[in-house]
Image (cartoon, rainbow, N blue to C red; front, side, top):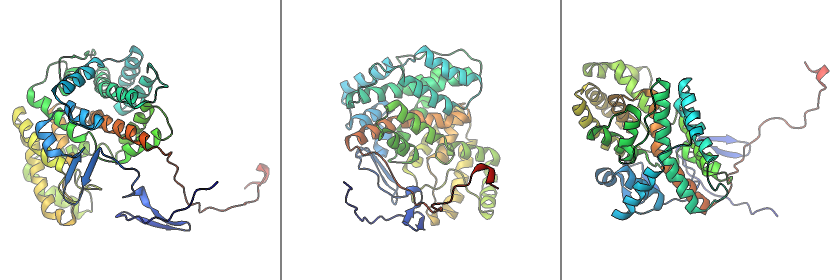
Length: 398
């Protein structure tokens, strides 16, 4: 029995393609795919909320572990809940030897670390102790395990790619500090740890961008959470989603000196080219994450004794606000975050994996939430090719 066809009105700020079957909203821009209580964006005024809390407050007062608990469980933890959650995260700081082998082998052959994350996450699913348990509790446990696993995979790939011995994780360090320790083999200073911790807080969720949607499409088939997260990683790898902070940092390196910034940006604009780290599909105001992270980058630059890149970015920002703000194009989080990664000594190819290291929490939360309102994604396409062509035997084809 066919379902009733319902006519709905959809508003979009994106491109609408007129087809023989009706209008097509190109890229599904502004199309709603589910209800959520995880995050909300006011793009007009530049406001971001996680579970009802403004990102400004969470960035100021909370750590990554506390915000991860909020995203996964829907409430801010009390002291005991937070300590128990941190202990659980720390207890999962290990990988099966076979998964280590996959990740380090890909590091040794210089494969992109995002490929290693895809493979490592998918492989980790093969070691799940109860793969047929699709309960919310089991998926929350998997989400925590994946949150602990990604930084280990990234650090293992990094060290293997450079012929360095692996640094085993420590359970006495915070999530951010342990990551830097595994990467570089020494306990990081407070400002460096804060740079990673705040980056993770600011990237943990952002409603339904392409990678989250890929995760939702995968989980809608009732696949396992590991496979759904691997789908999210695959989508994030694309340069139109992850990777913009790398492009922004390379832009500052090309500029070289603060006094070169204005001429560089004006030349880009005159040639019709993009200023990297500027503009956003949702924000038509200054990205609140960028506003917060700018101050962290200033502090980190002072700690590292290198203000060059911060000052170059400040000069670029002045031109952007002068020339592009009237078009509602403002700096986004990538405008500033690449500088922090550069100052921490993190190679470009690891910028997007660190994005995934944070967003895995949001992906998992959205997947778990969607299973409560489950419906298999099955859109349609408007076919515009021919029908009923006569079949031509192979010997008679041109």
